[in-house]
Length: 372
Image (cartoon, rainbow, N blue to C red):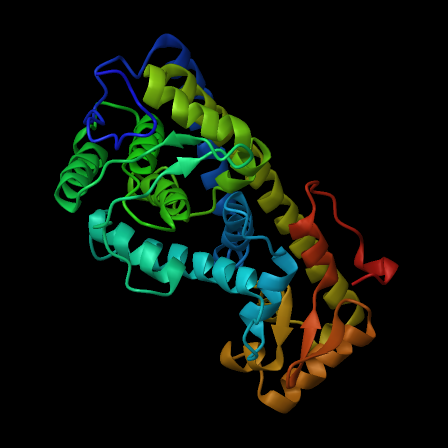
């Protein structure tokens, strides 16, 4: 029976695809992507305090992945509300913060069990701040944002969805003859096509992408900023998914995803190397202008997040509260930090670090110019 966008796609073929997914073009793109991911993994290892990466790159991923679903906030808002005790009131910021939390939860869960259907359910539940379960009710359909024409109706029936998800899970773990990056691209299409949740499927699927890379050992941390690429090529992303459904255009889809992995891994690697460079500049600056308070732990804390509280230094064992306040005020007086009142407490903003994280480029300004 020909594909009908208005009819539930209960005939969604199981994995692995019947057609060859590791064609010559795919393997060529895969070699390049594997090399880029390996360099990213290596760059990540150069940062002694891994909290610097865990607390920054995933926040950028959260902001971009949420924007793909038209949940728009800024990375500045996310960093700010991750630190202060006041809760975000903007619904989009709340949702994007939950994405970052869901990613951290999914990453931590890999230490206890392999990636599975329940992992996806937990991730979606955290994203939506609700007890999300596999869809039980019919009526879900995806439509063109402009014309409202239905372009895809996912499978219906909880039993059918669970059967297809079980196949999806087996493919991730058992298809070891297929390169992990290719497996990720194939599994991502299938998860989106199954569309197991009434809301949050897209973001859950993008978290799962990162978890696959960690689980297969390609990355140590979920720091591939892949949603940046998808956001910039959103129309191509959705067109590629639909082309697999309608025409089994696996090669084009996989090559597109692998190209995204390559570009994203290179960009994220360069961002991490720039962070490392800024850290070195910060160490030199504090040693020269505030030698009495210098410690590597103090400087590292300024890079865990661009917003720093007095409590962060206390919790990190760097200084007691009064001394921590003196340290941060002295760095603010030097122009390295900017003190701002947020909620019920004073927060110190590391402006140079925040600008570096928010910029598409990887250059950073000197602390000597007084811009923080």
